[in-house]
Image: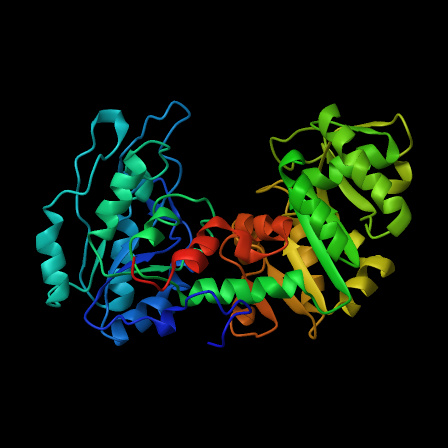
Length: 434
């Protein structure tokens, strides 16, 4: 892989891993209720795993899964957020034995420390009687998200397991022990997936033009920062979901069920900004529903923006009608774009999916544009609604699917991937002996 744009980022390909234990932080946060929902994030790290093993390294994997810590700091350790399904998947995929050590939690306070019983497994790993070790969910450990001296204790325990640290978890941007503190104690490097995510993120931050972004979300207030930054960068912006509903309320002075007055007030800044630049492309046909319980016959209908007169009240707006993407202004803009970034599920899933399917299909008609999709729900919806199209895109150089949509938005808000704490830690501490 070619050098990323910041030459200070230490890269895995420059690391000495021969006969070394390599602590590999991945973002395999794909387990819900004890089962893998989608192995895409796991599969995207296999290149890094292969490179480490092929060059003589012996890997110890670690990832976070879900949110086992509640708001009171209690940590639930159970099968629902276990790494075991991931280890089993990798065993089948890589044809090797992966050991998952078990550490006893202290009641609802989580796991205090890494037990010395792991030393026998590390010896087996060095002597190739094991293919890899997969540590328990990092969020099961008391120190991982702690602000006390438990942090440093956990970082030192992790460092004591290995000779080299590799971060391939671009989707995990929070500065936790396993993504941030650990770099102070081991020579640290960026894995191949992290390098690839950064390289493709630069196509969003410095796009070929015309550049169109499609952004949706379930909450307006969490997207204000990234949305304002995206607005500055794009030539045209398409909104969907709650974000679009909030914009419409602010733009037309209407009420839509489920949209808070506070969010409408916040969206007025975006409306004002667009009066001078006219970047927002309004999708003219929407589905209004009397209920969010489902797509119930007789209880939903298509509404046009022509009906959006000041003071009007609407029930739930739950999707974009496919006719919106046949509108010449929308269709032409999507077809002429050179870069398209999508972080959007257009409808209220699983019942209202027409808008997302129509959007993905229309974007695919533009065979020349670079098409970059945010991770998480955006990717899942694409796969569910357009499985044939998704399969055809996997080897298409014009498409890229990020593993972490939230990280992409955070990097866009900051204007660079190198300001993210785990990436910054690699640059400041990485590649060096402590």
